Image (cartoon, rainbow, N blue to C red; front, side):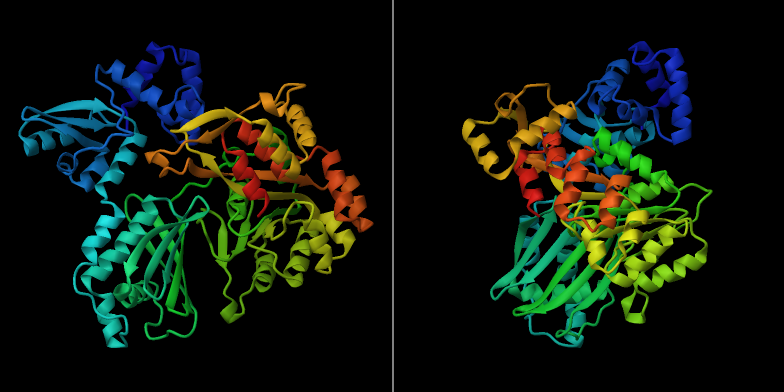
Length: 575
């Protein structure tokens, strides 16, 4: 971390902030418990690279960007990985006379002294960014292919192992290393799921990264039994049960991350298939601003969060980020003067001062039973992981009627379709109309990799193909209303973006994901339509009449801003 006094002096010297603004900034920093560099980046006063370049100039140190550099392995390994991670320091070049070091803390004199003694030569200190350090740290890990080639070249026991042999297989060092490496790489690649799939000839390992499954490795068939046994032991499952599905979980925790793995094992034709869902417990909950709502939609969400009672529903397919949105809303509502209770399956994020309980159908603790119990806990705000049946829907709606703010999720294709779904569950129209405040529908789209983003314009053929799928005139009209484009512009003159593919994004052109949303506010006009059991078409017309942005329109605005691509929007809209 940078010396805050030096950073303050540099900020004033470079006229980034005036004395008066700096004083205000320090009050905000104290309140939000963040550092000055986080504040400057958050307020878009400086980019991360710009900030560290400014500090390098201020401290009279060279600045180095190692983002795309391949460092010689012997040089990199000269500083052990634990020291590199803890002290944010990298060796990137070495000669007989000096070792060049990149660091984010140029005043870590104790570590520099230790390294000078270790190397026996002078250190040449360079300043770099935390992002660069994180990227270079990945180079400590050999390629997955090389790692497994080494691990599986030894003699392995056959796959047909039973009882005590399975226990022994699971404790074999090569098997432990294979599993540890698989889990470690999944964490470093920011995978959301690991699939381990047996085939007749081998074992296929796939990661789901940014919502898309990718082949990672094919392992020899003879490691299958040990691999499954090891994961069963970690998850506290029955080793000798091969005919029935099993579910479990385990956790990996160190200074860098805390990740829970939710494990599902199911018998298939060639053995047992394993799927592990990664839940980043140490990750920060996103703010509403970070989720990616457009300004008009953000106002609608904020207005309805502030209501004292009623129901806020988030809808979309599995894996569309519904739970993340609900947690972000809870984060806004989480103040000392309210009692917030949740019933979830599973608990994906731990939140301070929120009473979270997890359903367990085996012992009869369902969403409906859990919700009934929560109502006896004097709650102000209730979050139900999912409304799956009529019983849960009825209890949630009656809770919203009796002065509680209820948050939940449903599986429907769009925001408007949620209302007929509730009516189909047998809920009376007057209950739906009087309790529902807001419905948010969402999908996740991949973000363009910032390192290889390039601009382009649509050809006539592209526009003709789009016109077959979309109402382009309506979309352009909405973009004008939202001030995303100027009046009378057409698609041929607009600039869109795509990623070329680079080392940073695995040549995919995408890195990370963001939501596209539609926010359907239940106004008096919409309530009247619900009471009349209006069709989807009539409800959709009412939503558009009150300027609801559809997910496609929200996606197009993000595409124009260079956040995502048209291809991604179309893919997500088809889900």
